[in-house]
Every structure is written in structure tokens, then in C-alpha cells.
Image (cartoon, rainbow, N blue to C red; front, side, top):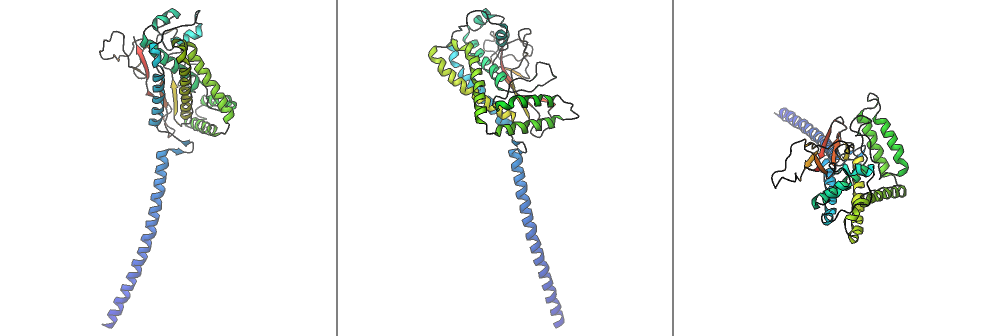
Length: 343
């Protein structure tokens, strides 16, 4: 009996030791599990924040909202022009000026036609919005081609936010790399280089070179717009409108900088052909939205059928190619359609 008790106590002691070892092992595994969960949480946070090697990447919604806000600011800015009167400069427009006007109002053929066109207050205000949008898209946003070299969709605009000493070297290298053999440099590798370069350049402490060059570009863009439409409002309003327009254009430059530092290829572009002086611009529901309808709509539903002639291009469109993961650069989607008015 005594021997049985001794054996039982020995077995209990061994089991208690085994249980202690299991408790220690459980503690170690629990701590390991906690560390793994913390690591996973940090990784998930980084992915959600998109803190990739190229720097923080903004969400599509964030960029979309910034673009919408910018277009809304232009819309508000144009309100005084609804009560304005079209005062065009003396003499005929040169061919370049007329081409720019027709990229906003493609149905206008000459100066007299523009004057008649602007007699309608709604047309005047929508034209002003379109003229600002065209100037902004062409002059303040750098867009990469979305088809073969030599076509309408070539490079346009410059990185006005960039140190002016770096603009041309970066642009030349960007063009060379984009058109190189894809077996040598894939689109993913090209865009990785692009976003890494623009992100690093955006961090350079060269405020004197950047600020002066950017201010020159923005002022030139503002002068371009006000040179045509400034006379359509009273002298008292012109100065405040010019100051407000400058602020809007600086906001455009900020957005331009943001989208150039994204891994996805974003672009703000005026839709339609650069040859609007030759060919009419027809409504395309995939990249255009008619919020105004024809003159004879009489409050009925605005027609949406493709193929109608566009009367005014009111705002540029926002496009996106690829994604944050560095994929699908072969496909482009229209994130925000261009606002237009059809006949």
C-alpha cells in the first residue's frame, strides 16, 4: 500500500511538471501569437495606408474628391459672368486663338459667331468654365500619352510644381523610358521609376526654384484666361476675380503634384480632338456627361444618346490607368466624365 502511494505521488509530480512545461510552452506560444498579430496589424495598416516604397498613396476617393472640389471652385468662380457682356478684343482672332476657343465651343466658327454665341448668359458662363478648364488641363497638368506616339494623345503640360532645373531632364527621360521596348522595361517598372522619381523630386528642398517657376506658370495661365474673359465683367470685379482665379489655379497645381506622385497613372484632360477646328466633337457617354441638354428640351429628360454634337466642353475629365499594385496599366478608365452641353 505504501509503495502504491509513493508511485502515485511520483506520477502526480511528473504530471505537474509536464503541466508546468505545457503552461510555459503555452505562454511562449501566446507571446509569439501576440507578436505575429501585432506584426500583421502593422502590415495591414501599412497596406490600408498604402505606405509603399514609393511613398504614401492616396485613395481613389481622395483624388476624386480633390478633383470635384477643384471643378466646383471653377463653377462658383464663373457666377459673375452670367450677368456679363461679351466684349471681344478688336480685330480678328488669329488661328491659334480660334483653335483654343473651338476646343471649348466647337460649333463656333469665327469671332462674330462667338459674339452671338455668348449673348446667352448660360452659354457665357459655361464657356468661361470651359475656358478655365482647358487652360488648367493643358498648362498645369502633365499628361502621358494614352496611345501611340505622334497621335493627339501625346505628352502635354509640364510639371510646374517641380524644380525648374529638373523639369526638362525628367521629361526627356520619362519619354525615352515610356517608348522603349516593353521586353526591356515593363509598364510596371516604368511607372515604379516614374512615381519614385516624382516623389523624391517633390521632397527636394528647392523652394526658391520651385516657387518662382510655379508662380510664373500659374500667373501665365491666369493671364491667358483673363486676357479673353476679363473684359466681360466690370473693372471693379476683375481684380478680385483674378485673385480668386490665381488661388484656384494654385489648387490645381497641388492636385497635379499629388496625382504625379501616385503609382497609378492619373490624368486631367480636355476631351475631344485637338483638331476641333476641322472636325465636330460628338457626344460620347463613356467620357462625357450632358447636364444641360439641348435648347429645345423644355424641361424634359436630358437626352443621353451618343453621336449628338457637343456645343460646349464645360470641364475636363479625370482618367486613371493602372492601380496602386502596379497592375493593369494597359487599361484606362474615366473616373469623372467631362461635363458638356450638347445642341
